[in-house]
Image (cartoon, rainbow, N blue to C red; front, side):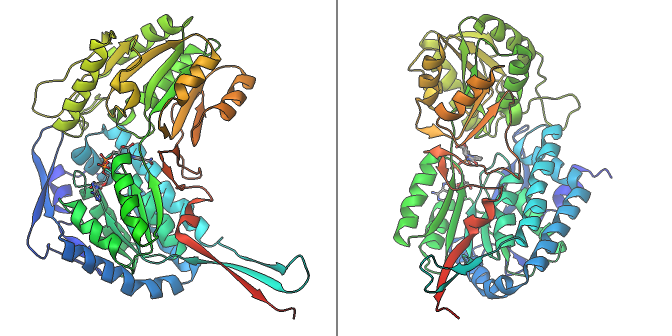
Length: 487
Ligand code: NAD
């Protein structure tokens, strides 16, 4: 089915979802959502106040006892229906994400597929939460271990994967029996509201998921986090904001999950298959226009192959087609906004000032829209800001290394530890990298690692907790141990 952009946007709710009804902000405030490829307003939605945020928490608290007591199988079936509905509405979700976030349609479709898998995966996990029962080792009693939903949760998501970041939190929370208030990023709130409507269509009871879009996330979040009825905060976003939220959560000793920033090293050893390495680099760097926490940030390449790798990668990068993601043939879209373009320009200039050379791109495109050319920089010098900071843009920064020890030292020289990529044809070397690289995830000869069945998450300042996999549902469960006498 084809749908026009205007029809699609008209069907996206523009209110706050509180206790099952869509409503305007209590003070009438609104938020304009822009299309980053044109700079024009795509839709205007309600901007929640502190009072609206707390009303959404009231609704989540009211709905919690009923949802927690709903049999796991019923909760699972609602998630499964949501998965099926998402397949039927895949094109609408893909187009909506391209409009509000800018990624090319093919990538938006891939996100619908990836994001949907969390619904299916956690529909399957819901019925498999089991405790245990047994004699204690001294033989003086029986131990019962049970798992319980933690309670009402506050979920905060970023703009770069508007659907997948929401389903990766909502699905395990609902599977575990928790209710939620979700606050999507102010730059891309439309997909979350559209998805909440889908959950209602799938039969989710009122108040189980509440949506508060807002232009002022700080004050509202602080009030919700300070409320003693809240039991869990799950955040995906930048490390600086995560740090601030962790400090707020400390007062209430709140359960937290933190999926934060990355600075992924991409290692190409002298024994790598360069076809695989170049293919992996294109995915790890240019997926989502470089705006992924898992994006390769530093390309560390053995000196003996750095020339050939750079030439081959540059040839591929030069063939990327930039434009609005809805246009046929476009393979790279805009950055999320003009601030992102300015930040990318600054990082590139800093590297050039320190001796890097441009092999492709290197500059922003004049408006309308927030475009930056796909860029390859060779010989990026130590001390360059783009080796320390998350670039979050389509810039390849290449650094040569002399041997494995130097590669490992460079790779681990960061406060982040989300993911690393290793290209080698040696099994022994890839096994050594598993032990030597300080990241929560690693791809060997592949440029993308995300999967609903995998425990996604980082080491060091990349975060706390895991999303997906068998671990995912336990982020929303708390354990109780009970001792009873011998029968
Ligand atoms: P951000 O930290 O600016 O914003 C993330 C969310 O936090 C948004 O919803 C925003 O409205 C909200 N927020 C901002 N300030 C807040 C405050 N004071 N109080 C409460 N909420 C606040 O990040 P972003 O620019 O939206 O996203 C990019 C970042 O997200 C990158 O650092 C990226 O690495 C990270 N990210 C991490 C993962 C992961 O799984 N580790 C996944 C995607 C993105």
